[in-house]
Amino acid sequence: AQTVTQSQPEMSVQEAETVTLSCTYDTSESDYYLFWYKQPPSRQMILVIRQEAYKQQNATENRFSVNFQKAAKSFSLKISDSQLGDAAMYFCAYRSPGSSNTGKLIFGQGTTLQVKP
Amino acid sequence: EAQVTQNPRYLITVTGKKLTVTCSQNMNHEYMSWYRQDPGLGLRQIYYSMNVEVTDKGDVPEGYKVSRKEKRNFPLILESPSPNQTSLYFCASSPTDRGLPGELFFGEGSRLTVL
Image: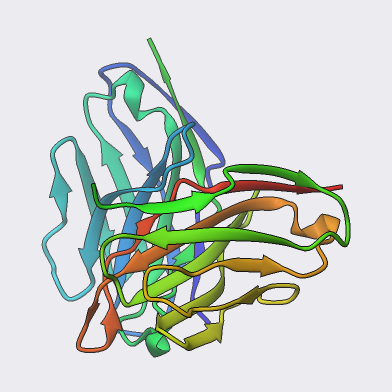
């Protein structure tokens, strides 16, 4: 069974600085999707970025980018020029494309990011 | 506005008192799902539905029921709630492409406390 691990329960960053959140996963599949979700205090789950495993190029979305290392099964999220509004819990998630039609996302434990002014 | 709406957002109840958390989406999505979020465990899938009258268990279905009588609605039913069902619940929906779900759209969450 696939698993997702976020080993950093909490992180902090100074406003305008860069921070990297770690995520590792375990799978025997060669094709899959990876996601980072943001959960601010409002609790809404917001998709930040997604990566298809067959794409070698790392996904980028404005100040958010990933470092996808397929062989190492690592999927870290880099937030550049951190802003106060980036403070939230961040979840890494895995999805198998054939997910047996369950559509299931497998989530990591989450990392709480604090942004200091 | 495209959205997934859950109600209630907050609920405190007592052991054994049946409750229903409603979920409605206005995007005509075929796929809907329920997750629960617990500290240190992330989110785990409870039930999912590929379309009307088609539902199946996720990873943690014990103590829950669902129904999908209409495409837009997917209520989560706790017939006899217990304290271990105290959690934050999320409903999510997705369009399907060739029968497979795509990107999930989440509701705002329902905080349930069972005393």
